[in-house]
Length: 263
Image (tube, rainbow, N blue to C red; front, top):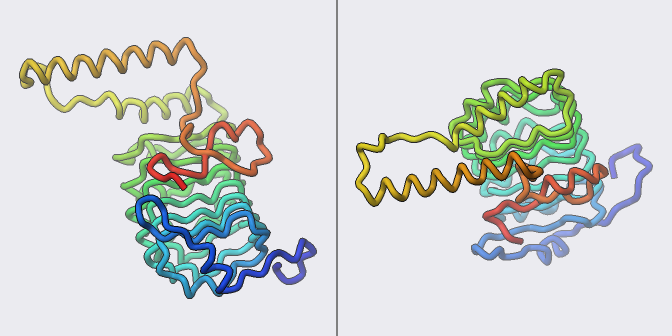
C-alpha cells in the first residue's frame, strides 16, 4: 500500500508466488497473471520475470506504475484495467514490443498520459475508457498500427481528426462523453466506417469469378447495413469485456480479452 494510505494492506507477492502465476497461453506465450489479488503496490520482485510476453495486473488496488516496468522489453500484452492509476510512467514509451494496452477503469487524466506513448509504434489496441480524460492525447495520431481505440466514459468534448486519419483504425468506442455536437461525432464515426467501403479496383479490371465474389461481399455488407438501421447496434467493442466496472452499462461494451486472445 502506498505510504500514508489507509486502504487494505493487500496481498504480498513474493517471487515464488509470482512464478506460480505464470501460465502458458494457447499460442505458447508466457503470461504472468496477477489479477484480482488485492495488490496495492507494484510488486518489484516480478521484474526478475521480465522475459514474460504478457502481464496482467488488472482488478487490483494499484495506484502507481514505476518507471522500472520498462524492463519488460518482451512484453506484447499489458493489462492494468480496474486499478487506481492516475499517471503512466514516461518509460512506458520504451516498451516498443507492446501490441495491446488496457488501462481502462482507472483515474487517468489527460496530463497523466506521457508524450512518450508515441514511441509505441507497434501497438494495435489501446483502451483508455472509464477514466477522467478531457482531451485525446495527440500522441495517438502517431501510432499508425492502431486497429482499436477505446475512449468511452470520459470527459471528452471533441475527437481530433488525426485519429480518423490513422490508416488501420477499424474500431473506435467514444460512447458516453460530453460531445456538444452529436452531428460532429457522427460525422467522425462515419469517416471510420467508410474505411470498410474502400474499393481499389474497377469492375472492368476483374475477371468474372472475382467480380461475382466482390458483388456477393458487397451485397452482404449492404444487408448488414440495412439490418443495422432497424435494430439496436451493439457496442463497437463488443468483443471486449469490461470487468469490475461501476458503470453497469459499460459491461456490454468491453471485454478484457481481444478477439485473437483467449485466456
